[in-house]
Length: 558
Image (cartoon, rainbow, N blue to C red; front, side, top):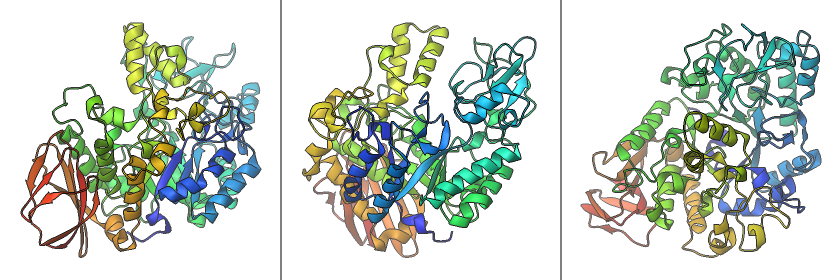
């Protein structure tokens, strides 16, 4: 694996609508992000991923784009975006924008023209098919529930939408459409972007047979993802996208793509891959809270560790993964991976250490560094997200009561991660002087940046410390190129691994138990460089770890 300029990146994801409001309208904006750049620099990050700020009707919070080259007025203007890029660069921070090119908004001028003339130029920019037997072309289910097809007026024509009906899928088979996309991407890169996080890229290629499949639910529909995710021929588009846009500018690209076969991984993220990285979603399928694992609260370690180590092995020597604990599409990680009674500084900092030293480029999500939490609602009407409401209706249709459906939503809703950033103990957590677009979590008086800023024992202070270690020059080769080797795999509640490269060895040990744990550790010399407790108990042969203690050792004598 060749060294790349972005190998030293420590990333931070911003959901702009909820980060910082600068004008009192209750919606976070670009000027608000600019006002917090010094905070981000002090945290220790050098790469910023900003979720969509393009012009949009906001049906899917900006992932339904009506104009790729204009900033939505709720976030500011193009000048604000240019200033964000420039001000971030002054602080050594690169800016990534979200690239959403699987679909547009139904309000995009292209689609409006397509509705007027489905068989014309812009109609061919989308996937429009004749219905069958008085219904849609097939029985694919949308990722957001319901049919993946929407009828056009009173005609027998339907357009495909893998997400909301307001997000019609683009037809990447059309060369004119691809040229428009490439022009847009290159214009943004010319304005100084460091690169892109690329949304839903695995869906660009569809299986054009469009045949019905046996229904897998009472709605008569079928999960059709095998027909529109990682379909054969996708590589043609990805190769062209890289050649026309990414490679000439050597920009950073992180793709949202899953289930890439190990034999194909080098094609995606190798030295000559389509992208710089893909996300590692290993842990996001797991939810440990309120299940039967209280004795071993963090780890269901057999399954969770196996999945993480499998991904580490799978990527080693081929390329780098982008490692995350949280993002805008999942509940907060303390509520997802830690039983309520065990959530504390120690268990949260353990998760941070365990993830930040895996091979890959880490990205934090806003609020993760202070331990922001889920905010369950008492009514479905309190949720704003269209996908959340669609899932709620689907639960009801499957036979759940309203109370059961709401309980499930309160566990799984992605809106838990979208509550406003908690800056201080003032009204609305310092997010806005107006009425916030979404309720602030009532715990903001106990969990906020201001409270933790000058507290050396806070989670925020701990994140700052470990990010300094993570960027130590003498550790870069082992952190970037070092192999991840599992340790103590058979020891209950222990999540441990070595990172090795040439003569450098790091040993990361995390005790995921609610009680002390002792294990053999025989090294001639081991320097503790990270510890979420004040001390540790090691006699040269055996180490005893406190509950949720996590330590990183630099081994210099085996």
